[in-house]
Structure formats: structure tokens, C-alpha cells
Image 1: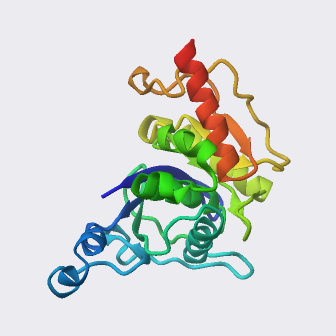
Image 2: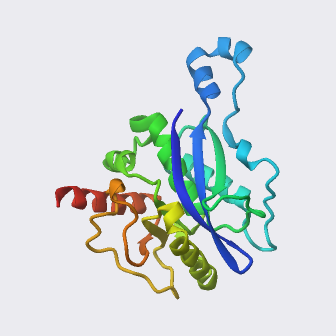
Length: 248
């Protein structure tokens, strides 16, 4: 069973919250792949696709008029990963979203969790299928499998090509404020947004020796923000930052 965790800044009305998005492959389906017909008769498994985990039971997922709901966002990210990153169509994924500060979400809405879902989906998919999954993207295979996403937040919509799209500036500011306020519990290192995002003051990523030094605790100072075109661009930049710090 492979698991990936990515932080997701979400907006609820006029307030921001930070969630911990957890994706993992289903062990029953992996057993089915290895045992074939025997497992089908004796070992229940989760069908291919996306499925809510136990932690999401009873959590509503409303979508405001004209906005892409969380469920549709997840399905779009899954389709992008299948089409543009050659992940296996038989991948069976369970997902959960926990509030970093505890409690329950009043309902999940909006499409700006798309980047986080796509990043986590690629990470968990690559953990399963590794070289075969990125047959056409071999040059970034090692980068993707090496990058840690546990303390990386992502808030960007995605289109059907997998590109990160800008988020409404007032909503994004609320989300970044929530990330900054919840750093002691979420331990967020940096936030990823769309490359074309405007209207948001950003701190450039320079000289960040503690970004991937997980034992050093949460770094002091303002929240750093990384602009990325898509998931591939994001992984490249994260891997470069990680490599530079290793070499220091």
C-alpha cells in the first residue's frame, strides 16, 4: 500500500482552513492484481478509481453555482494523471481530508484543491508503478519519487491539460493566511500556486536550508510561495530546491 500526503488550503465562507489530503492505494486491489481470479472470489477489493475513505463519511461536498466541486476536481485530477502521466487506469485510490486543527469540515467546495490532489495522486501512483508509470517522462522519475510532499501545500485549479490555473485573489489570500496561522499544527513549508497567479504578495524562495530538513522544525519567517505551471514543473522545482540544500 502506497500513501501520499499533501496539505490543502481551503476557503469556507470568509475564513480559511488547512486540510491534510491523504491518498493511498487499496491493498485489496493490489492483492487482486497479484492473485487474479482467486482474489476475485476470496478477497474483496475496491474497484479502480477514486473512493472516499472512512474519515469522509457524513461529510458533505457542496459546490456553489458555477464552481467546480471537490469531487469533480478530484475526478478531473485523476483523468489528467491517467491521460498525461500514463498512470494505470486500474489504480484504486482511497482519499481522506482531515482538518489540521482537528474537528470536521462543514463541507468541501471549490476547485482550488485540484493542484494538491494531482500532486498527491502522481506521488502515490508513481510509488506503485514507478518506471512503468512515467515511460514518457523518465527524466523526472527520480525527482518525483524523491520529493517529499507532506509539508507542501497546494492551492490552484487545474484544467483538462493538467495546467495549474489562478485562484480568485481574495480567496487565495484567505487560504495563505490560514496556512500561516496553522503552521504549528500543519508544519507547512511552502505553498504552491499557479504560475500566472496575480494580486497576491509573495515571498521569493531563496536560501531555504530548512525546507526539507524535517528534524529542524517549522522554519521561521513568512510563508514561501512557489509558482508552478503544472505538476511536472512543480516537482522539478521542488527537486531542485531539495538538491541544492543537500549540496550546501
